[in-house]
Amino acid sequence: MINYKKYTMKTIILFAMMASVVCLSCTHKQQQTQPEAAPDKVFADSLSDAEEEKLSTMLEELRKRLDATTDTALRINAFGNGRESRTIRVDLLLKTPEWEKRFRKHIMDSPLLRFDGPDGQEPCELKGVNQIGNVSLAARQAVYSTSDRQAYFILQNHSIDTIAYGSSYQLAYEKDGQWYYLPTDRFFTMEKIKLLPGGETTFWANLYPEVNKNRPGKYRFFKEIEIDGQVEWMMAEFKLTDSPAKLPTNATLSYAYELTAPDSTQLKVCADVKEISMWTEKPVYPLNASSVDVYVWNPTSTPFSFGRRWNLEMRKEDKWVEAKCKASLILCKDDEMSGETAPELLSFRFPVSQWYHLEKGIC
Image (tube, rainbow, N blue to C red; front, side, top):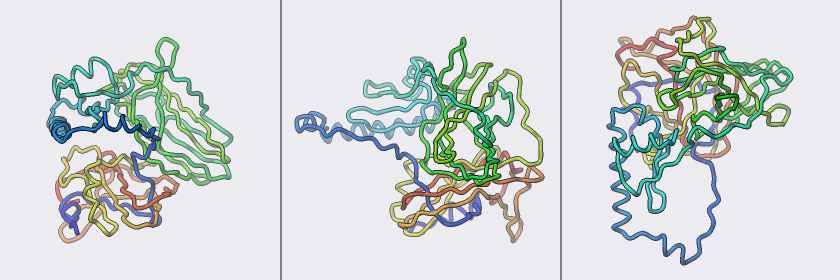
């Protein structure tokens, strides 16, 4: 059995206070139906051992170069890659001739590369409202900075019914009176999250200013919310400006974690693990780390669910104590995450630096 102690006691350990034990559906589960190939097609697409080795070696080298590059914006934009028939697919948040040229110049240039992603010019036809009955969605701030990496939104359920939502969202920006999709996250987990009557929760959306070069103007955040058994699009509008935006300083900040797509390399780690396990993505994090990714592996056949409470503790002398918090009071999301299948690998992203003062040591 793999010993995960080195991933925890010697590094950052986040204690997620689980409401109850249960699993969610993991990421990368957009199922696609592939047409059954005819025998001659299979034969035509088959690769020789030499071609297989060439593509595998090429993909491994590409990943090493991406990990090593100092071009942070390029690394953020090229968020995924993999084998696809006779080519290497590179997934870009924003696919433009300029970004493709930059990738070929600084990472790898080959006719076997195929780039995939939106160009940021797709018209957005989505329509949504900010209130349905006693359920409302609003930006936490009316104005954010063009340099902000994230924008935050508050969903309030003042109805007498439980509502639900998933992890996906859409962003749009206005240009010359027309709305266009803003490139953002494309892979989401498939869980259904419940928000109880009287509950409130906070979402965040990644703006990727390093990639999108966001301009001042109007923007929209879209979220599908299930109300009374019907899925409705809700929308919150906000603005971006070149002036720095200040984070609200009230004492009731939400500190919600994010469910993210697990790195595919972590799936290999899980292969021989037979017990429910938890570990951090890296053994050591810098003091200026904005977040910490934590993996939870459920190898059983029983799904589990959990709540939103978590905290960061530090080792002080011979005991564990909670790290110094930046807010006088932290309120959790009032919801429950429920899974549908098992076994599952879950990936959590905890915004540690936003809510805690980080110090050197074992956490």
